[in-house]
Image (cartoon, rainbow, N blue to C red; front, side, top):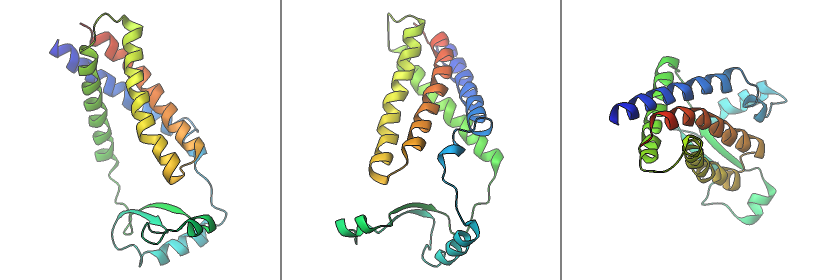
Length: 179
């Protein structure tokens, strides 16, 4: 049983990783959810000026929670900002290995849950996996839409992407993780 779980987790992790590559690098849907800037040069100039306000990387709200009033929020602007003032020294190989490891660990955990079920046929096991991911997606992404005003398009594409990924990964897990 443990060998099947480990094999299923590894294979499902690879399927999830492959889907992620297609979803982000081939399909246009993620990029279509990002707005374009009318004047990128002016925004870059303004962003460089903001470096003095953001001393360390992190998540910032504007207006800050301590100064937020109903009137201030209504008059705008409102911003949810994830910033790294010094820029990113991207190591794509490390990021890819980290993503693959995360996929495998998540598949292992869902596979363990799947092994706790009994009496489900193959498609019901796939549905079980997708159901877990649907609940997790709603718990994680809907609050960002609700509270931080992430766009409906971005939220919908993110959730759809996860559901497709885990449907594909679930095909593998349902085959490997059965009692």
